[in-house]
Length: 263
Ligand SMILES: NC(=O)c1ccc[n+]([C@@H]2O[C@H](COP(=O)([O-])OP(=O)(O)OC[C@H]3O[C@@H](n4cnc5c(N)ncnc54)[C@H](OP(=O)(O)O)[C@@H]3O)[C@@H](O)[C@H]2O)c1
Image (cartoon, rainbow, N blue to C red):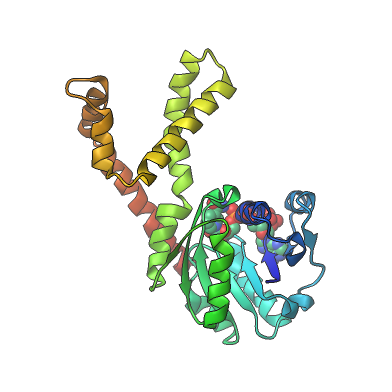
C-alpha cells in the first residue's frame, strides 16, 4: 500500500519508525510537511518528501497527522487536489461530519494511535466512517504491524479512546516523574541507571499484566499484611489517588469532545 503522511510530526514519526522496523518498505511511504525540523528527521529516516499533492491519486491512503487547528484546511487542500481521497484521520476531536462537509467524495476512517507505535507497542482504535471494506482491512493490517488494534463501532468512542490511550503514555510519564525524583537520590544522580530501573519496572508491570492475572491478584502478589506496599497503598487510598486519576482522564475525554466544536 502506497501511503502519504500529511503532517510529519510526533505521531507520524512514531508510526513511520514502527513501520520501518516492521520491515515495511520505505519506498511505499512519502510525506508532506512544512516544518523544516520535521522534514529533516523524516528524510533522515529515508522517507521521501512528496513535492506535490497532485500525485495524491497515486496513494492508496493519506494519513492525516496535523494538529486539530490545521486539520480542516489540510483536508480542503487535499480535496481540491485529489479526486477521491482516501483519508485516515489520526486527528483528535474533529468529526467525520466536519470533514465530509468539505467533500462528499472523501473516503474516511478515523483512528487514534499513541506514540508507543514507534516501538511496535502501539494501541490504535479505528472507526470506519465510509471507507470500502477492503481499504479498512488494509489499514488494520498496516497498523497491526506496530501494535494492538481496537475496532470501535461508534465515532464517539474515538473521543473516549483519545483521552484514555492517545494521551495515555503522557499520564504515566507524568506519574513516573515522582519515581525518577526519588530514585535519583538512591542512584546518586545516575540518570542512565535511573532510567533503566524505571524502564524495567514498567516492562515488568506490562509483562505481569500480559500473564493474564487480574490487577487485584497482581496487587496482592506484591502487598503483604502490614508490609511496606500495604502502607503505600493505604496512603494512596487516603489521598484519593484513584479518583483523582479517574477525574483527570474524564477531563481529557471531555476536552477531546470540545475540540470538535472549536473547528
Ligand atoms: N502526539 C501524539 O501522541 C498523538 C497521539 C494520537 C493522536 N495524535 C494526533 O495527531 C495529530 C498530530 O499530532 P503531532 O503531535 O504529531 O503534531 P505535530 O508534531 O505538530 O506535527 C504536525 C506536523 O504537521 C505540519 N503541518 C500542519 N499543517 C500543515 C500543512 N497544511 N501543510 C504541511 N504541513 C503541515 C506541522 O507543521 P508546523 O509545525 O509548521 O505547524 C507539523 O510539522 C494531532 O491532531 C493529534 O491529535 C497525536
